[in-house]
Amino acid sequence: MEARSKVALVLFAAFATVPVLAALLDDPFLLVIATRMLAFAIAAMALDLILGFGAMVSFGHAAYLGFGAYAVAILSRFGITDLFAHLALGVTLSALFALPTGALSLRTRGVYFIMITLAFGQMAYFFFVSLSALGGDDGVTLPMRSTLFGQPVLENDLTLFCVALGLLIALYALCSAIVGSRFGRVLTGTRENITRMEAIGFSPFRYQLTAYVISGCITSVAGVLLANQAEFVSPAFMNWHRSGELIVMVVLGGIGTLTGAIGGAVIALLLEEWFGMLTDHWPLLFGLVLVLVVLFSPGGLTGALRKLRRGQ
Amino acid sequence: MTNLFLLQVLNGVQLGILLFLISAGLTLVFGIMDFVNLAHGALYMIGAYLLASFSAVTGSYGAGLLLALPAILVVGLMLERLVFRRLYERSHLDQVLATFGLILIITEGVEIIWGPSPLTAPMPAILSGSIPLIGPLKYPVYRLAVIAVGLLVALGLYLLIRHTRIGMRLRAGATNRPMLSALGVDVNRLFTFVFGFGALLAGLAGALVAPILSVDSGMGESVLILAFVVIVIGGIGSVKGAFVAALMVGLIDTLGRSFGPILLRAILDPAAASQAGRTLAPMLVYFLMAAVLVWRPSGLFGRAQS
Image (cartoon, rainbow over all chains, first blue to last red; front, side, top):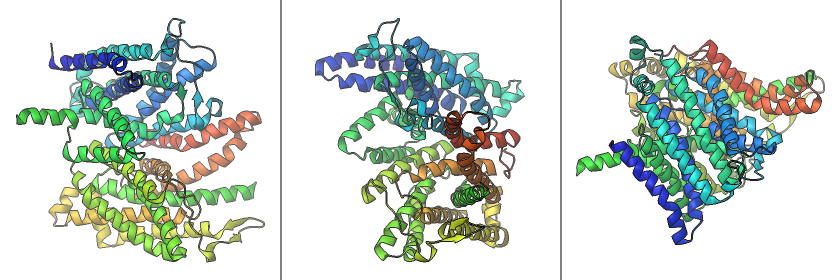
């Protein structure tokens, strides 16, 4: 087995022990935070698919979290509570938004790409802020969590956690399949040298756009999970800070390793929880860690581990 | 209606001028140093806070401004020395992350120092009235003064960039940095200058709006995103582009918010028109950006990308 799959197995196994741990410690909050970690792990992994493998630094990915979350809110309003319907709408909305904005953004490179995705993300954000039918800025409380085959089983935190873990594992399998495929190799090729890819007869734009849309769609799954976990949806899901946090997760874990993105999400949320216990001004500490990591450990956690291993 | 239109045009120009002050510094830093500084909006915010504090201490807006400007310059130079300088050679992603971290630090820091509730700054007494423009139309003198200051700065920047030795180096730096340094120019000193200058412009914008907006820790962010839109439309590194694009964005945003619902009423019923207007208005500038990019991927005045 490849080393990478081993790391993934270890990560999933660690997640699987959380319910046991929560039961032993009699701390149901552990499950809540672990569910949020799973959701953000999915989003970070999706972002890493284009950031790590395609060198597309999307600074507007929180928009897709929002599409997933609002898919739950919109359908719930019409009495449709099925999880699969929510996922389907989230993915559809994301694809519909990702296709035109991705095509426009991909006309540009580098810093322009970062800023355009940021601006499009804010466009989606302002759309939901001003949409008073869904609570506008204040957001909307969900009447209930999604149902699974007509049953309200997700009301139970443990079931929701299991569904989230199942989705993470399935989507990890999907992402590694994509990365390992011919498509993934072309994508990685565009990361290294676009001109060369063109020269050997590929049309990088199509590959990059496809990857961008896939990444947006997967991110919306995380949005559906987050909405269910919080039973509340607001534009804050898609604020540009969120997009920044997603990038932070990918970089903390190490760019271009799917397991790194998952680990990065776990670390980022652990830090948030920990700093949150220390002070109300936890973003200050979080920002400090961020600046220090960038200045002193460019490869993120994976890079630091690799350095340590080499040092030994 | 005509009066309302004129009023909103002036408001749009005023927003555009502020956006120009912020984007000019941002675009110089981008264009010359190839550096993405997300914390630029935070400098604008600090400028507003410093002005509010210094005015409160001295009891005068003018004295507050005289103290706030050098202070924001010091803050900008300190940030350059402590953080930015170490990131020039790094990837854009690293710069984005580090400056994102700085935003978190500065925003929380500001809340720790000044508290979470918004501050207000005094308006200078001589500029506090309104003057009649045409017929019954009146406009606050202070807002006109903001427009005047912005135009003066724009003129000054134009002269600095087109007609001085430093400006020549700035333009050379934006075009070909290695060549400039090969010609014996101390590029590091030039960078420090550009950074301090950019911080000063952002801080000035913050100080100028402090009396007309509430000064709070979120004010830098909305402006930062708009400044990015301005730069993308105008073309990275082009101060002229920033000026044109800032006015376009300021006008379209302001006019869209006030006249969008009115125009929509022609095709929709009033309730739907006002809802659609409210929803669409904030998105107008992004549509503008998209349209410009379809036409010219590197912005109105940008050089073709390599």
